[in-house]
Every structure is written in structure tokens, then in C-alpha cells.
Length: 167
Image (cartoon, rainbow, N blue to C red; front, side, top):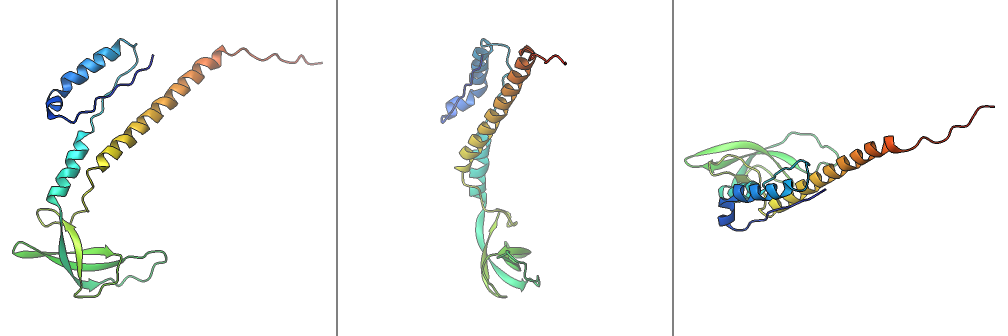
């Protein structure tokens, strides 16, 4: 028999005893048969994305060099080298930008708390979508596996069709 259960927690009180809750839930599931059981926890992505939002910010970087790249069809961005202040010093790196800039222009870039180049932080709401995507992928995989098992089980049980006797 099949059974799918889940635990959605918005309370730190429940999170602190997550192992207890999951153990009890899986214990109840074992009464349903010898099927395998699994656990997935999705809270870490939300914490990671929240941390990114806290530690990353934009700074204004000054373009110091334009790319000498030749025109590439269907590419609407250009490479520029820019410098930005970090503490008492500065950092320099190449960036791709979608707007026309020249030496001396300012562009906004994302950096982390140490002033190192970083990607734009992922919105915390993306963690929920990540969980839905993983859940859908697991469901799809389990469904395909079950369909394959049913097909393999039914195949030997099908009677052979009558054969024509040669003349």
C-alpha cells in the first residue's frame, strides 16, 4: 500500500524536535507495508537565501576598460573591466553588462560582506519553489518506478496469443 506524509513547520518549537516528529511519522508509515521510506528537509535553502540577502549588497563600480571583443550575433551584453572600493583598497574584475558604457561610467555590482564579487541574492521565496520542484521530481520518479514494476509483474502473467498452425 502507498502512503505519503509530510510535516510543514512554521514554528521553531517543532523544528527543535524535528527528529522526534519524523521518527514517529515514519513509524506509523511502517505499518503500511515493507515499502521503503525517505526523508527530505527543505529549511536549509530558505536559511541560505536569507543569509545571502543579509550579506550581499550593491556597490558602484567605475568602468576602467572596455572589452575588445568583436560583435557576436544574438549577444546583447558587453564585457567591461571595473574597479570598486573595498575598505581602504579596491578590487578589479571583468563584468558583463547589458547597457552601453564607456570608461569612467559607473555600474552597480553585487558584492559580499568581504567586498568580493557575488551573484545577486536569491529571493527567499525561491526556497518554496525549489521544494516543490524536488517534490515533483521525486513523485515523478516514484510513479515511473511503480509503472515499471507493474508492467514487469503483469508481463509474465499475460497468456500467450494462439499461434497459427502452418499449412
